[in-house]
Image (cartoon, rainbow, N blue to C red):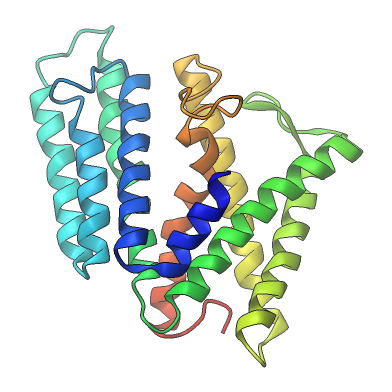
Length: 260
């Protein structure tokens, strides 16, 4: 049900996409903070959600450097504020809260910056989303159909090598479809490299979030989406892929599609 609204905001860009990203980052920050055991209604509990939403807006406004500085400042303030909480019981959660700033804020900066490109923002953002979604769907279907050896049993017992291969193949095939829609001519090797690289990062992001949940001893990051857990459960791969895609976009140059 949410997919049409998301696609509309991605297509429309501008403040539609900014609002979508900021709200998502706010929710992601709240879930991370809650898993760390902090009350989001009391500082420093609301520092990460607020910082993530603000850096998304700053990045969309063409100020990614200010966004980086704001995120770093928020992490520093949270670290100083929680410094007296050095008891053995709270130290790990304090560090986890601070690590949430780069984990969420890098994606909060990268995705709006990617979409803000007036020439290729829509194409590149759709390319990234399709790769992430196709990787997730392909991994699930291939894992269910073929099963086989576990990919990382200590982290996520349900994931298999067949699922990883299926996800990667699905991501590459879907990426070719996006490239064909936006480019009359393109290099198949460039599409393959971009899609495969982002597909691998996507699956790594999924595993990372599984490791985080295992660390905190929770099944789901939240309960915002009935039957699907929280936002972190749904956006874990995108959180990892967004910074990688932004680096790729920076390397090829503004106004250039990711698969060129």
